Length: 192
Image (cartoon, one colour):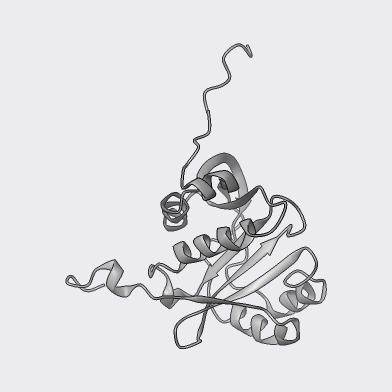
């Protein structure tokens, strides 16, 4: 980023388009064409992606995937909603390398909350990221999500290490009211 260019100057508006399962080959090529450093498989194997596609990993009753499109209709990201039939869905978000740091994550989290909470029976949304994914952690906080969990040495990395995972959530009631209800972390008194 140039010294005179602010982050807001680089932000782009995005829209969302549900994945057509018949266009799964395009999704496979798209995912395999970039690097996802905070995922277990930073360079996804197209053959494994094809198996996942056939198994309904990206499009089924319990999994919904949406393209994230820039103003010109270019596919700049993808969000997969998991446990869709549950009252507490989770998600996976990927933004192409050359579009990161441009506000797409925050726009996507806001869209996700509006989409999920407009459906009957949905009470909260959960997401996780690696402890070292500071950009995503800042995005969660900026969008009103609350840190609810810290899982030690659980997230496998491509090089065989394990790093901490951080769980975030947003309540429908907080989203509706524009509030943030903090977690009471120090509630162990009297358990000894």
